[in-house]
Length: 241
Image (cartoon, rainbow, N blue to C red; front, top):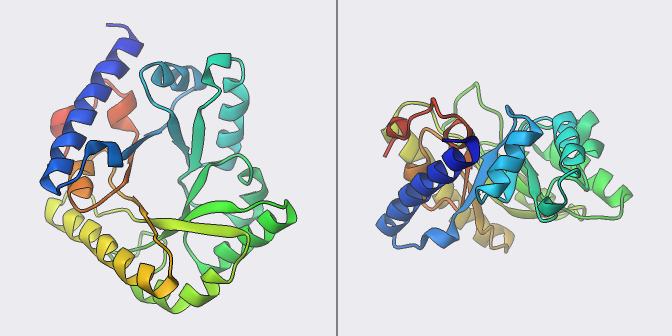
């Protein structure tokens, strides 16, 4: 089997898991966007994944984001490809992301939100962003705590260079109970913050290769899949369900 055929078959398997999980929460699979996390693969693999049906890709380093965008210009059939910034964003790298990323998933602090807003205003644009929430409270993870983001809500709303589209989180690895509790916590916070901020906050970016069906059951609208998409060695049976 060639690589495009593998990617196509694997995508079909992923969509099947998404559809099954969506039905469990009374939703349609069309409500969930698949983001192929391309941070560890070369542009050629992104082109292959595009041929297999993916349209949105995720990068976690601004330099790599720019490199991929430039490299993919050699394939004119990819005019509608999109990239999201999913990794930690340092303030000195913001200018490398504005105007290139469709969506920044990782606004992890009020300081970063202000910096992105200021740079966006300087470029006369508005950045679409998600607020990164550390729902699980793990010290190894960045992001607002649920309490911090509620305290910062008014200040975040005042920033004219960003448009807050929703929330993002990551769950503890290898523990289905804690993962599902984390995703449910993000959904509950979405409801609270939406009322507080007067915004729909319709995007919930949560769920990765190991746990995305759990995230979909709890309301995720966007799952970020890397190894599961690109690696033949990563078995679908490894996914927590």
